[in-house]
Image (cartoon, rainbow, N blue to C red; front, side, top):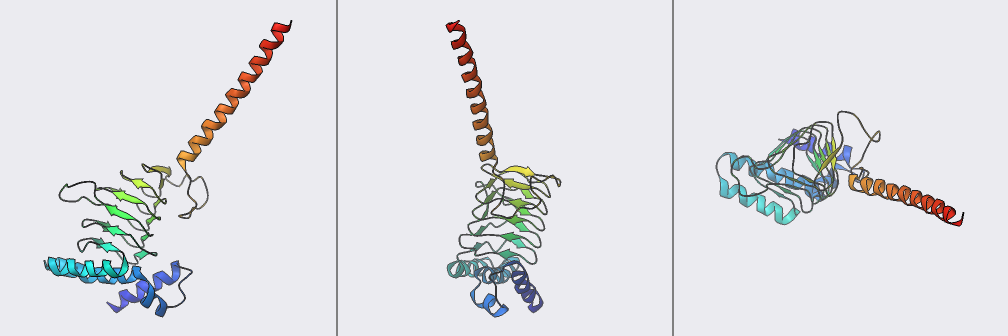
Length: 219
């Protein structure tokens, strides 16, 4: 248990430049408090002590602003940065080395039974405010851009952005060498820019035709 706790602290020190010391992390980081509370709640959940499990998770939610259902399965070195407003559903499965930011929802899409929440494979990053909904899979090493709404499976080594989520990088073919969660391409903006350029070209062509007609009338 203590080895896992040290691993969690080391993960934050490596990923968060604002983290100054292990002492600061243990006392002030809501994400790690929520994670450690979830491990207790999940252990109770597996023993079928459902009321106690939900009680622990709701107390943790009250103090951290992060809601993790006791039934969610979470791997190692899970990092919740800031974390306020994060919601993780009952049948979520999260792999190792996953990072999520504040306002992320890993939720369902209705009242269906069984597996109804997402599966995130290893090394996935879900940026601020993104919603990943339904029994879908986010492949390993993939990134979900801030504010995206993802309703379909995302292949491994991909970047998905927009509403609904659109894959803009896949199988190592990248628009840029590297993306961070605040520096992702916007397919909607790209389409608007392309349409604007086409309209300008058409306007220039129309102006040229009108000039030719004017010259013809003068002759």
